[in-house]
Image 1 (tube, helix red, strand yellow):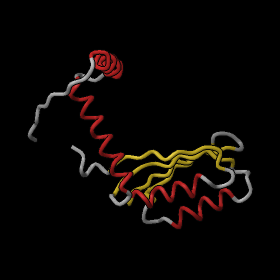
Image 2 (cartoon, rainbow, N blue to C red):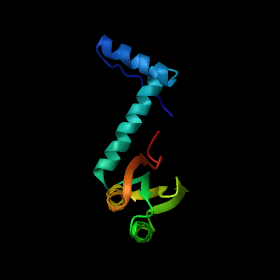
Image 3 (cartoon, rainbow, N blue to C red):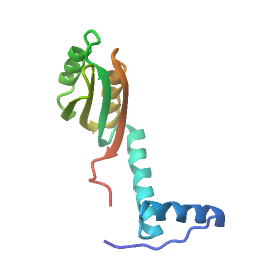
Image 4 (spheres, helix red, strand yellow):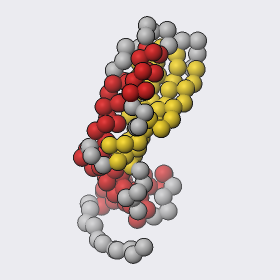
Amino acid sequence: MRITRFGVSVPDELLERFDRIIEEKGYVNRSEAIRDMMRDFIVRYEWEQGEGEVAGTITMLYNHDEAEVVKELLDLQHDYLNEIISSIHVHMDEHNCLEVIIVKGKANRIKEIADRLLSLKGVKHGKLVMTGTGKELV
């Protein structure tokens, strides 16, 4: 892979703060930290466009005692067989469950799935974590 060097002008105070943070996070140098930031920027852009293939997880905490929530969660997951790759179910206590659903597909379709799942009555908290498929990232 060909590497290109380029210069960036930033205020001293911004660079000092950046250097402190990347050291805390364990980056070996600025270049690697900036490459990670660029990858994140590209992934977010792909999600915003809505049409590219993306991947992610939908994490939900819900009360399984809530009327119909388990049936609705399962029914919705069956509606999206092409996008839902796998799911992990964990019993947190006698009432609460944690479910992580791994998804892959068009960004707008994945957002639709997350919105439908996370808005169900009985879901206490949830989040869509977005990433790319890795195909286009260097």
